[in-house]
Amino acid sequence: MRDIDLKTLRLLVAVCDHRNMARAAQEAHIEPSAISKRIAQLESDLGVPLLTRSRRGVEPTAAGNALLEHARSVLFTMERIASDVAAFGGGLKGRVSLCASASAIAEALPDDISSFMREPANQNIRVDVEERLSSDLVRLLREGAASLGVCWDNVDLQGLQHRPYRQDRLALAVHQDHPLANEASLCFDQTLEYEHVGLLPSTAVHTMLQRAAAGAGKSVSYRVIVSSFDAAFRVVAAGLGISVVPVEVAETYRPVRGIKVIPLTDAWAQRRFVVCFRSFDALQPAAQRMVDYLASQAGTLTVNGST
Image (cartoon, rainbow, N blue to C red; front, side):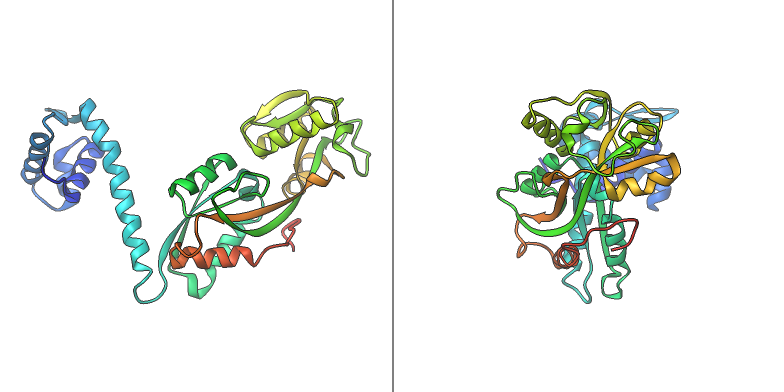
C-alpha cells in the first residue's frame, strides 16, 4: 500500500466535517475534483469505499469513520510534533501537555499556569490541561501520552520522577444547621455516624476515606455520590449530607451557600501534591521550564487566593 499523505487526510477530515466536497474544497482553496481524485486514490489504496456520495452531499462509510478517527489523531500528533520541535528555534516555544487531578484543578493549579504563561519569557508556550483521575494520569505519563502530571503524592509513582508542588488540607463541609456545625475541629471517625456525600469510587479521595474508616473499624455511609466538588457542595448546601473536601475549595462556597467548614485533625488530612513525569532530561524545554515553575510553589498552602 502506498504511504498515506497528510494533505489527503486533512482533506478527508474537512469533507467529513462539512459533509460536502464543494465546501471542503472552498475552505482548502482547491478544486472539488482535486479532492475527489485524492480520496478516490486513497479508497483504491485501502481497497474499501470511504464515502457514500449522494445529491445531498457525502457521508463516511463504516470504514471511513474508522479512518476518520485515526486521521484526527495523526493530524493532532503532527501539530504537536511541529510545536515541540519549534522550541529549539529562536526563542523558547512549545506545547506542554499536562494532566491533573480534580483537586489540583479546583485549587491553585489554574492560577499557577496563568502566572507562568504571563511571564514574558513564556509567552510562546502553550499549556494544555486535561482533568484525569490520578490512576489514569499516572498511566498516561508512563505510556508517554502526556508530558506532565499534577496529583496527590499518595498514588503509586513507580517508574516516574516527581518534584513537590503545593499542599492543601482536607476538612468537613456541613450545612449550617447540621449537628456537627458548631465543632471547631473533628477527627474523621467522628463523622462516620452521619451520611456522607462522596466522590466517585475511582478517585483517590474515595479510596483514602474508605481506608481511614476501615482503620477505625467502621464504614462510610454514602447518601449521594457525585462527580465533582461543585456538585458535592450543592448537595451539602441542600442539607442532604456532609462531605470531606479541601479547605481551599470549600472557602469559595462557604459564604455563599451557608456551609460550615470544619478542619480535620487526622494526619492524612494534610495533603501534598507533586508534579510528575517520566524523565526530566527527556522533557522538551518548555515542559522543563513548567516543572521548575510549579516546583517553585512547593510547600505553599493557598487559602482564599492568598499564600
